[in-house]
Image: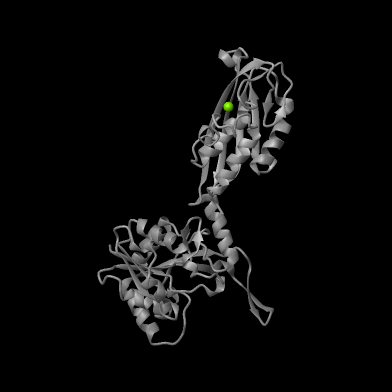
Length: 386
Ligand code: MG
């Protein structure tokens, strides 16, 4: 089976009110059109893609439209949707068995939905993805309800819509002879008298039409898509000696011993600083704040942590949460944990609920167990979401 795909990206996105064509607006690091195209190129059943674009984009296409081995052809779209689709259809291979049409403004289409729609079209001649309606559906007349429609008979049409090539050719030919404007290709195929099978669509396969849709799509992409959550890991250890202050996240802890070091030897902040640098792939605490540099000699751990967060922010990362385990035989830290967490939340720029600090002993084992040292393991998560 040979499958051609037409991506309808000819619109100029007037309803979205954005400066650039809406199909080029970024969602989590890639434009709607790029996300859409890449999914179709990944789908095993797809052999080629034709993209209908505004003519200025055909003349100067973005680099992602070069494709990845499967042919990608660009055509200038027409005024109406069916004109764009007809122009693209003319560039599909004559050997195609099935032609799929999809809106560039549905960037969350999945390979599975594409495969299911194509398989149904191959069997039935025409198939569309569609969702059932859960709300009660009313037909209205001049702001009054005219009647309640049987919702079990109603579906909301999505794309992809797939057609045997001869079926779509007949429908497009018929459309050429009328002035009516259609909002999807299935409508043309229905009008031409062909049956159209309904395939279960996907709720995530939304069409991005309004600024609110765009915000929601960016949020969805940040939650599970290309915008990434990145985790970083940090570790620190200091000797414990008599007569040194014992400071964790800027909180002074009553103790006969304290961590030895040039600075306040705040193991918790040092481990977290490395975790933030790790999550942002920015190196480590020794690279940014070498203790051979006078500027950092004696610097408070909390201050260094704040600087690390600022450097991560400059690199485009926002802190999501942090978690740490402090391992020390004594003193007991439980009473200090709320104050420690409050200081960390302030410095990290996150809510108190996004910070966690636990304390453990080493069960008397090794240097930490003998009370000669304190150690800390920490993780921090950052995101590049907008
Ligand atoms: Mg240290």
